[in-house]
Image 1 (cartoon, rainbow, N blue to C red):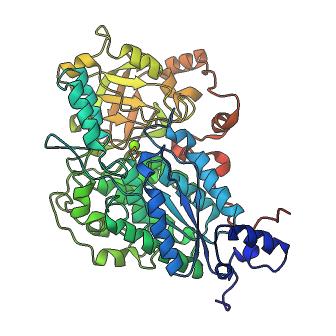
Image 2 (cartoon, helix red, strand yellow; image 1 turned 30 degrees about the horizontal axis):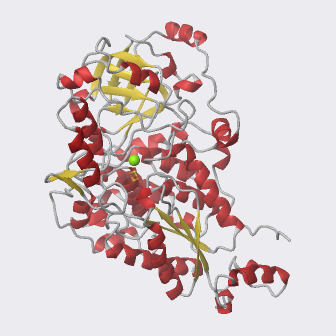
Image 3 (cartoon, rainbow, N blue to C red; image 1 turned 180 degrees about the vertical axis):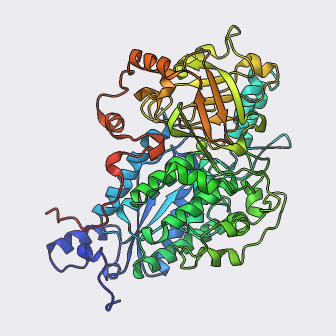
Length: 573
Ligand code: FES
Ligand code: MG
């Protein structure tokens, strides 16, 4: 290695002076022998393992496989924790802390003797948070996902993470499912390590990482417990050492074209609307301009090929057995930039060469897709001047063009108090409008946009209604749900001005969302509007409120956009 240019870590470990002593001597207390400081690549393993993040609880073991790969390839692995985010426990929403985790990753990487990094993530926000943080440092980077849980199964029927929970909770409420059956389903759903096995945000982001080439093929689909995932982790350890030796930073992999591939693949898999904010934020960290219009333009022609919950019937195990993401991407090949380079050095086109589909009921073809519209549609109009999104593949076709009377809820507590009131003035044609679910309003932009329908309408057999909010929706959810309305109500966006009885027109085909109220009347209402009191006056929450951008800018902090690279900071002593 002597002919190579010294690595970043040599500025710590490769010195004969007292600074080298500090750097090496204390590391030796872990039993690391002296030859490990001979200038070999030092690889960080950034781990979101946590018992508070059940979807990532197995990543401690997976890290051992990454380590072995790094050691065999001649690198020095050093595993470190960052703040982890579990969707199911963190309140008010894990999204409030995505940017904080990205800061944790960014600063830990830059401050330490690290030449390259393997990111271990799984649960929804952990993947974008780690990618965003790493992007701002731009070292050689590979993502290894924890993988999906095995399929849930109860009383002979499949149970999909999240998706079926919504159905079950509604069934208990209207009396078609007993409380005992509900508890039984709970135990039958999460029966192995891993993340949600529907096409929720975790599977979506793992798929998009694979599509961008920043993760190895089959990263999204090997089940968490499949030994081939351990092999993928070990191989990632080999490849990261090569990437460091060949000096290939993350920005060479996650390019504008790679991001475009991710948007196309998101359409093909019927991926989560959350990918919209995460990819825009990630692009921003790489100094790339990705907009809602890119999402609409690139997604418009992409059909959904995958029959997977929440849009369809199957689960991630079936996707894996049908050939995984490479088989699906092979179908999308005409729409992809095949020349993009991946972390293993191959191009995307090379990857698809050997891919094969083993089950056409799960992965359909471009000619005979599962649903004609896979991409996320971006809506604009006087109700969402900076845009809103809807996932047509999870919506009801008959509601995609709809005019209805607004039934307005000021915030989530107001919704919970009144939605099931038998006297609520609502019918199947009404449009449910929820305010204050945005980044500043809730705070943190939680997944409450797919608000449950009024009990009396559900009991009458109504399965879907148009719903509009400035909130997000879980990737595991479904319905004709307009999300991410920007600007949000809490900063005086037009959503704040909607009143009960106003007519709203949704036309997905025309990409429009219109509030049928005169400009003069809206101006009057705007003059009467007062902002809600802020949720925080100190701490991280205060930093969030002061700096967060709206959904169309990826909900990233303004001051985090861009990167600072990986200069070696000054000595501490
Ligand atoms: Fe963690 Fe769904 S709750 S991936
Ligand atoms: Mg989720």
